[in-house]
Image (cartoon, rainbow, N blue to C red; front, side):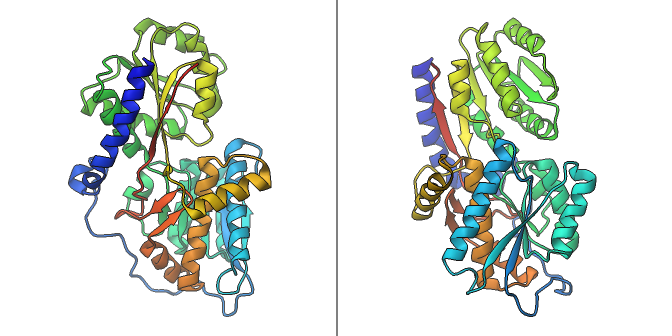
Length: 389
């Protein structure tokens, strides 16, 4: 199976490279049913908010302060971007500052915190959030307040497919990830007995819909689709069902710790099986492979080739925190740096800033950033093959 997966991974990279030009065409993107014209904002500028004289320019971060791998990495990446921006002269000599707010219940108290970022803190743009559900909250406020929002982590396709002109998304959405994993992996190399395991949280439900649709469209309906309560402490029944159907591939989307626990338990009873993982913020696929022994094929929402900004970011991140920058940290860094670069062109007016972001074509630490006609980044994710032990 190792040789088979090595072939799969190599051919996946080649196939994605050859297909990249096709994917830019809406008629070849079943996951993008949008008009061909770019989304734009042509409304009035009143209330867009441009302070008469700015001694600091504020960027709002809607995310927890830390305590878990995702929010910690997001904070560190955003902080490093602000430090780099100010060491490079800020925005035409004006320093940049990050203003952070959060609430544990984003659907009620969290919305109020985003409002406070916009109207009390007078931020020029928003970055957030740690998942798709809380990003939807920030998007609603951003739309009403006419302020740009850059999402470094959310993968829910509806965030940008709705063609709201105020949101920009950096990682590939769930539809695109599902299409790549199924078409270029499971279908191309004839895995005939896939099983699908997804969580009951918002992230899992949206990913489940995309993965199930892609599996059926490409003639690989799952032998079994299990939905796992994310608060569940018992995985024995899930493992027993997987063993019963004996899949040759498991496509999985669960919160990081639950994914690791389930695959480690399944590995004790599984036969020959390959695990396919979309990108899940906070899930380290190397740790999954080490804990379970499975062959893993996963997507990373970054470009492999290093650029000068990538090397600077990763070197300074390691020097500062003694860690290798995760995709979460890199994407948060790019979100803030993208806003700073646009501010240097637009000035502090939020509508002008939105337009400058929309015009941006820039190579960040995670690779090139160019927008499709809904505000989603078109950068190709990297296919990563990890051998089990």
